[in-house]
Amino acid sequence: MDLQTKIGKISGFKSRGKQLLALFNAKASLNTKQTDIDNSISALRTQIETACRDNETESLCNSLNDQLATFAIKATELSNQIEDKLEAFEASLDSRKEKKITRKKDTEKRDTLTIIKAYYGDLDVTSKVTAAIKDNELTIQATNAVFTDPMVGYTKTLVVGYRFGKAMPELVMVKEGETLKISYKRNQRPFTPISNTTTIFGGYYGTQDIKSQLKTMVANGDAEIKANNQNFGDPMPGIIKTLVIGYFDLNGTAKVDVAREGKTITLYEKIPDIKSMLSRMIVYIMNPTTYDYDKSQLIIVGAFYGTQPSFPEVRDLMSNNVLSLTVSDSINAQATEEINPKTLAVGYRYGNGKPDLVVAAKGSKMEIKEGSTYTPYGVQAKTDVIKAFYGTVDVTTKVKAAFDSGATFKVTNANLDNSDQRSPKTLMVLYTLPTGHQCLQMVREGDYTILAPPVSFFGWQQPIIGIFLFLSLIHISEPTRPERISYAVFCLKKKK
Image (tube, rainbow, N blue to C red; front, side, top):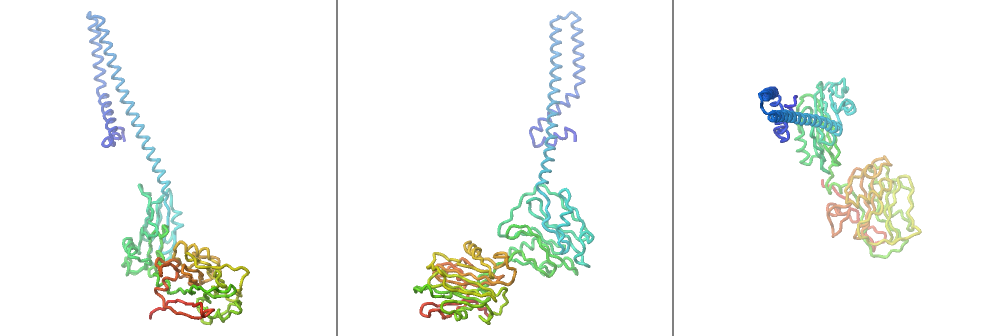
């Protein structure tokens, strides 16, 4: 591209470009007439010399010569100025071009191509696809020779989820035998997902783009997406298809998941409603007492063997305000649900002291007896988690933290403790309410526990609220001291 064309490109939108273009045209015009100017100067000089020879005054000849010299100098200076400005402008264009190239390289370096996940059929081929990236671009063939054959006898697709830097991820698909190409795209803006929201950025069912359908399903509250023709039609009749979904999860992490036809992708775990959660939860509640108990009096708040409420069985094993036993199925023959480890959990207190919780696994010994110290424990200003066990592991700190944050969480190893891989376990929580009630709660592994529901009952918030609203009440009057204490077990009875 010559200099005039370069100037012309910017002349329409930069005033300086117009000025420089005028300079260039002036220089061109000057060059065209340079010969005429030189000839004119030469002819004028000849005329002056002739006039001087014809007895013109010497002063006039000198004056004309001086004017002629000045004219020639100014013409040369003007030509040089125009040339200098044009050379400077050309250097400026070259500099801008170099900076543009540098910026492009810096942008491409900053916006590195990252493969989120890649599937050939339902085979994870992320590592092979990532290894094929060269110079921030990807070219790869979708063939069995490259990836092996995860679905013998069926036509497959290669689906790749990727993003440049922090831009919005994309999901692309090619059929078996085709070549997939991904090149850098300029002017991509960073994308920040909305917290606690599932955001779809792509989806394919076989060869069909289903992104809009997935967005609608998620907007309607669907957390589990089944790969079937009923949901998405049949883009590949007679062939087993794969469902591939690209999305941001609730934590803002970009993911790409796959499922063969007939299977399901879970985008997030849908928290059940309160009634469903409480259907698997059992809570002992001991009413507050105004009686001044002797500090040596052993009072049982509640007891579970496995998942079975076992207060009367444990009470009958007490002797002289001491509970000493070996944990076995003889404690409660109805405790047949498979729990591993199977534990006996007993919430208790001495006199009006602070309640405590002990847990012992089947086959081990449990002993509860009066300690050397005694701490009176009155009504607390707020719900107080006293102790919690997950299986036989003390998880009081984690449960207390979850309660303080008002959380509803799932009882799992990831949320509570990973040290004991046996399953299924139970979570036992001993806590007191602002009303003075003392409670022992049992929740199975895999179920949800409600520690601070956003509703109130009799003016206070507490874990047992939902049980009052939804559960059938079974009042068990089997107190340690009949005239002063009553106990109740609440559980949900499913309607047939």
